[in-house]
Structure formats: C-alpha cells, structure tokens
Image 1 (cartoon, rainbow, N blue to C red):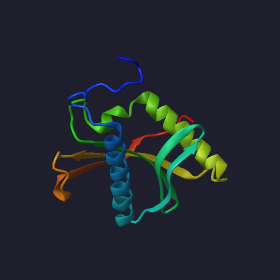
Image 2 (image 1 turned 180 degrees about the vertical axis):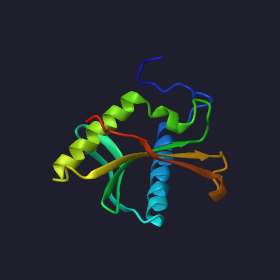
Image 3 (image 1 turned 135 degrees about the vertical axis):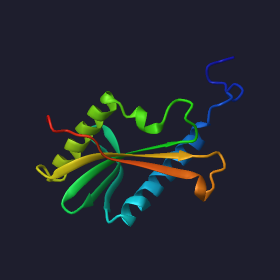
Image 4 (image 1 turned 90 degrees about the horizontal axis):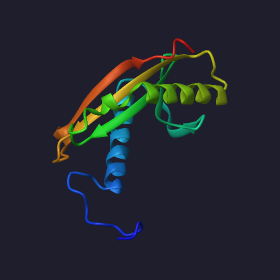
Length: 141
C-alpha cells in the first residue's frame, strides 16, 4: 500500500477530525466553566512564541493560562498527565511571549489545567471535569 493511501481504520483510535471536534468542544466547555466562575476569556487558541495557548483568562488582576485536555478514554492515562515538564516549559514560553506581545509583563500569572473525561455516550451528564488551579508555575523565570 502506498504511503498516501488510507488503510482500514485502526480499532481503538478516534479519527483525527473527531479528536479535533472533541478537543474544540472541551475548550468551549472550559471557557463556559471559567466564565461561570467570574473569569473573562481574553484569548482562545492563540499562538505566541511559537506555542499554542488553549485559553487565556483574567480575573481580579490575574492572568490565567489554561491548558485543556479532553479524553474519551483513560487507556493512555488521564488527560492532565500529558502536561509533563516539557509541555509545561513550552506553555511558560508561550505565556511569557503572550504577555510581552500585549505589553503586560509583570502581571500576576497562573497556569491551570482543565481535564475533561467524557463517557462514550457524550451526553451532558457524561462530561466530568477536573480543574487544577496553579497546576505548575513559572516562578524560576
């Protein structure tokens, strides 16, 4: 089979468009979740310093950079576990670039992770959230 030909679907994997749609819905829900808690969404899916930032929220003088992970299965671990040291360093780099690009250096910042676990049914009650406030920091920067 040539490299450009699509083979049969692999069992246990979600097609890329489905993953993107699920991820986008998770980000939409995370933005609504934050708004309901008094945050203002300042930016979504923005690139800064070569890094994509899922959500940038603000509340009471604090800028919060939020990484959103949405999973249908824990087969490969919970979503929040995929935000390891290397990913944290990229997000910090992107956040600092975002602040610099907008003339907001020196602002108080926080890094949160919002992880959604969705049962296969995808009903409203199937969405379970875990919000990790201050999941990691950039205090050494």
